[in-house]
Image (tube, rainbow, N blue to C red; front, side, top):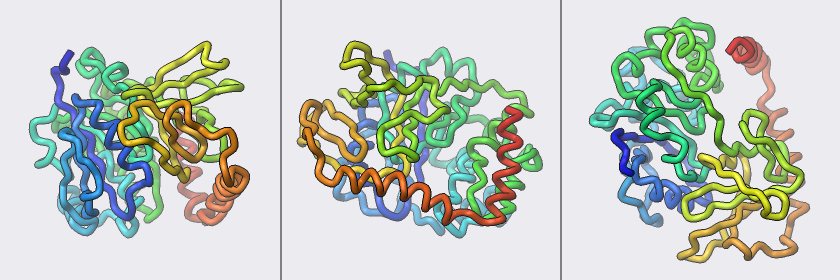
Length: 318
């Protein structure tokens, strides 16, 4: 059944697309009730762009200028990753592109969507102004009050002023806006029905924020638009809204017209075609697990400690 609501996901992207970006686009294509506004100055000529993906040709500097103009402040956008702290402002920043949509949202590119309509039905869209709280996928009602919440409550703990106090990422799109929504009293739907794969482990393990729990044996699949986990030798399956593969190098071994993929620690294969022995598996495991810890150490700074303490305090109160 076709939705009564028009929804657009806004995804600014700069640098280099993920190795499996074509798979991401395929997962978008099979969710025709959701449009993707891909804001980038990268060439998309090597990809088959689905009808529900709209490429907005805009450089990072142009986005930066829009941010400064819409909030009348010099948001510290020295690095592309800091755009994550601008996500709650997308309703204002991309107001022209979002005209005619009932909801707008933001998402990451290191995910594969499942059947979004199964998890985001019209009954939920009618009831809630904000759906979900984790930055890899959030929806907001496209109305002036909701679009201006970040500005209206900018001085809230971990709010916009806090995000603007540092060049580092402040998780404003997650913790800060969750606190703003709580203070403002808007209706929020929070069911974490996704498969957020932790980068701490080489194996595909669900992060603690997920509603589902890890099983001793589990395998993940994308099956013609559905994200599925099999446990206990395939005797039991469950379905997720999407799978998030953050901070993980992945290679693609998918035949052109395959509709069923198995997702392993570092690759996508046609279902049933995963090799019994994967070349370089030990090297990739060490790179994933040790590399994650090294990356954390490199990010350590007194500034990061200050921000983390404030964020942790607010997170505990939500």
